[in-house]
Amino acid sequence: MSDADLVRRIAPKGDAEAEAELCGRMGPRIRLYGLKHFRNAEAADDLRQQVLLTMIEALRAGKLREAEKVASFVLGTCRMTVLDARRNAQRRERLLSEFGEQTAQLLPPKMPDLDEQRLAGCVQSLNERERTVIILSFYDEQSGAEVGRFLGVSEANVRVIRHRAMQQLRGCMGATV
Amino acid sequence: MSCANPIKVGLLSDYWLGVVTPDEEAHVEEHFLGCADCSAELERVVAVAEGIRKLAAEASLTMIVSPELLRRAAEKGMRIREYAVEPGGSVACTVTPEDDFLIGRLAADLGGASRVDLSICNEHGVELARLTDIPFDAGSGEVIWQQSITYAKAAPNGCMVARLMSVEEPATERLLGEYTFVHTRTMPGPSAW
Image (cartoon, rainbow over all chains, first blue to last red):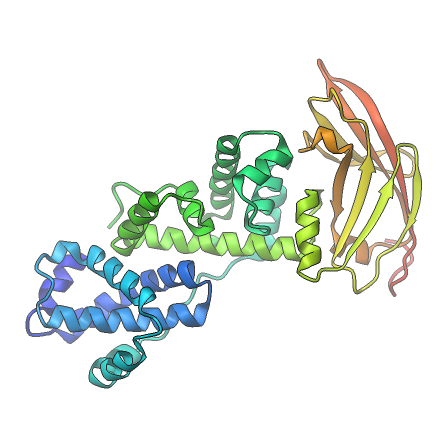
C-alpha cells in the first residue's frame, strides 16, 4: 500500500491502523531531515514527533486535498517546524495532549548499526586520493575547494572523486550497514 | 516496492555534507520523504558518513593528510605527536597513551613529480606496504603521513623506513627521500610481536 493509499484511509474519519503505519514510515524520514538540519539526535526526535502530530491532525481534518502530495506536505511542515522550533513550545503541548497518546507510543527509529571493522577495511581499500578526499570531507568538513587546493585538482574533480569513493564504500559495505 | 528513479549515493552524501544547491536540497528532501528505498539508502549513507568521521577521529587509518586537517584536529583539542624528518634523516620516536594522532612530516623536493608513492619498509629495506599515487602539494615541500595510532600504541621497539618515490614512466622509480623511524616503546606491552 502506498503512502497516498494510507492518507486516503485516514481522511476524513481516521483509521488508527493506517495512521500508525504512515507514522511508522514517515517517522524515520522526518528524523533524517531533522538530523541533517539540527545535527542533534534529540532535536531530530522532537521534530519527528511534532511533524507527525501536525501531519495526523491535518490528515484527519481533511486538509490535504491530494493524497499523492503527502511528501510535499511533510516537507513543508518540516521546514516550518524547524523555523518555528522555539515559538512552538505551547502548540506542541496542546497537540501532545490531544493526539499524543498513540504517536508517543512509537519508539524513536533506530539508525542502522554500522559494522565499524568492515568500514575500516572498506576505507583502507580505497585508493590514496579517494581516502584523503573522504576523510577531509567528512571528518574535517573541508570544502571541495580546500580539498582541491591540497590535491591540486579542481573542485569539480574533488566532487567526482568523492562520489566515486562513496559509491565504492556503499558497495563494499553491502547490506550490512 | 522499489524506487523507479533512485537518488544516487553521491548526491545523498553531498546532501548530508551540505554541499548541494538549494534546488538540489529541495529535490532530495521531497523525494526521500516520500520514498522508502531512498530514505533507507540515505540512512545507510549517513551511517557510513558518521562511521568515517569516527574512524578519522580515532586516527587508526594509515594515510596522507593535509596540514589543514592537523590544524583543525589541534583546535578540537586532539594531541598530535609529530616527527619531522629530512631526506636521509633518522628520528627516535615513541607514542604515549595521551596521543591522538601520530604524524611523520617527510620533507622532500616534490617539484616535477607527477606520481609519488610512499613505500614502508622494515629495517632491512624490505617493503611491507605501499601507499600508491599519494596526494601531495608540490609547493609545500613535504608529505604528511599519518601512521595508525592504534598500531603504534601496540607496536614493540622497532625500526621502520619510509621511502618517498617519484614514479616515472615506464615503471621507473626515483628516490625522493628515505626516512628512518626508530620506535621505542614507552607504553607497557610485549617487547616483540
